[in-house]
Length: 145
Image (cartoon, rainbow, N blue to C red):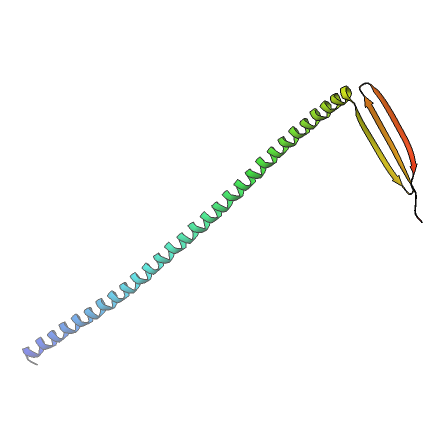
């Protein structure tokens, strides 16, 4: 073997080594690109998941706020109704005393009746100032048979 063959073998080994290195670098490049694609996809999925969690938490917060506002309005309504009922009761008491005062000074007629079978029971109280007259009467009713 001469000196020319050794150089060809060395040259061939150099080309083979270069080609193997190129194939390894290409394989590593493809692997790194695939890994990068998977990482980008995963980051996008995480972003979507975070947005969904934020949206759900915002909806939950809005629902709680609505419930609190509704409850507060019910409590305010209940308190106003309670105050209204107290005022209405006070007005009725004032009206009762005013009507009693008016009746004591002017007079009034108050009565009741009860209808049983064939008779009418009538009770009347007539008041004029300090004088009062009570009338109680049973009136038979004509019954057509």
